[in-house]
Image 1 (tube, protein in one colour):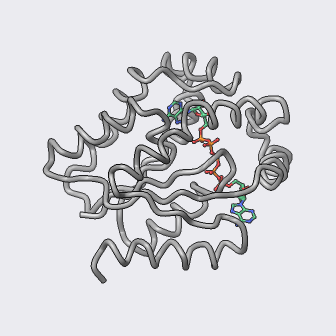
Image 2 (image 1 turned 90 degrees about the horizontal axis):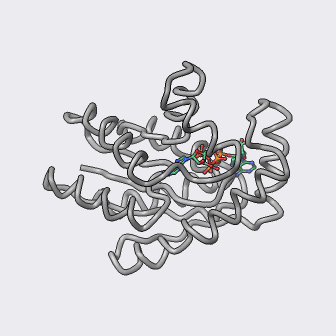
Length: 192
Ligand code: AP5
């Protein structure tokens, strides 16, 4: 069972690399950002709540986010593994994920931290906002998302180091080179 946490600041390439990992390793993908954006698009109550936080660059409260993750995870009972993209983002979420996996006799196989310099993150996200119109990709909201990342999410680096699951990935360079580095780490834990 291959359970991968793909981690990094906004714009670090989590979604981009997740697509490649899914294709190569045949595991399921849970992107909490995509789940929330689909709820917003469908105009659900959850979507309305989520929009308020996302537009402000803030995190959705842990209790709500953990319930959402649990329900998506439940739908992947027979899978070969899951890539968690955008979750966990807080220590409370990481602890909840650990419990959820343990209940199935599983654990996180590896946590991949995509490290990208902040000026590059800003360039990527501003460009994506222009290309795609994603509402939270404007300079003011990106700055808030980066602050939230540093204060609430980055502490997970030490948390996963303590779990022995942390791997650093240089997230600057071509998407192909970054994917090759990621595959080396995955293959090492997958015993290939
Ligand atoms: P989410 O959708 O998870 O956003 P994010 O973490 O800000 O990440 P992004 O999607 O912006 O970036 P990414 O790392 O996936 O990079 P990508 O591959 O797209 O979450 C959005 C919001 O939802 C949060 O702010 C929060 O409000 C809420 N939320 C979600 N999960 C939550 C949780 N667990 N708890 C609470 N709230 C939660 O790449 C970015 C761009 O760069 C793309 O255009 C791409 O083409 C380009 N790019 C990628 N790789 C490269 C490369 N190597 N070189 C050049 N360009 C590249």
